[in-house]
Image (cartoon, rainbow, N blue to C red; front, side, top):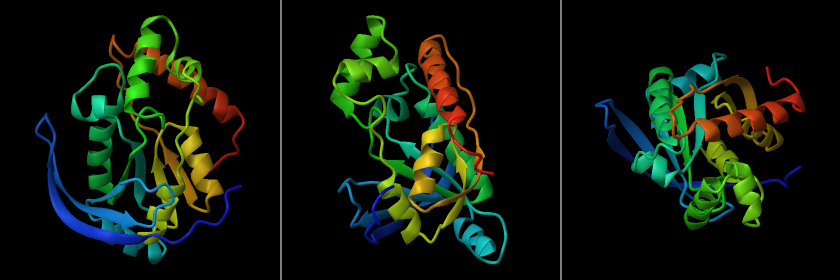
Amino acid sequence: MYDALPAATVRTQVTVPLRFPDGYATTARVFSFDGLVDGREHLAFGLGDWAGALRRHAAGGAAPLVRPHSECLTGDVFGSQRCDCGPQLREAVQRISDAGGFLLYLRQEGRGIGLYPKLDAYALQDAGLDTYEANVALGHDEDERDYRAAAQMLAVLEVPELVLLSSNPDKAEQLTRLGVTVAEVVPTGVFLSPANADYLAAKASRAAARAVDLPSLN
């Protein structure tokens, strides 16, 4: 169980037009924060009718759709085929824009180990380790991502309950322990390519193993 989190505050909010390589475009209200526990520059993107989604939920309606998305420079920006991060980001922005909600862009490269170590892990994967084994071989945990800052951001944005867009059981588990109500989990799509097949197989195997130990969140 985590200790109670200090309150964060909104530092800046600005409207930013977004456009993806396939031509999809939308507009986001982008929030930055002060007081996040890890001191990193995380962002929240309010997408679609996010304000209306909050009002409807406060009046007893459905919770807003939210995806915590961990930064992946190689996939999100450069279109790397070694992972599915870029397609997941693109999918999430459209689905949240349609429903109204938030994308939390979390600066947790390489499942929390950092950009350079992630590239070191790529080299070990080329030698035969899977993505989790490579992190461990480098002296890290399999997954070092921490969602305390995400919980702080949700509190500032007045999102006590959400529909979680994710196929990772750990996100739901951590957010629930941090006091966020996960009303429903909606899985992301599967973005398979020859280059990421082994990576996706390792992710699916680990997610299935964790899900066996988790209670229902519905």
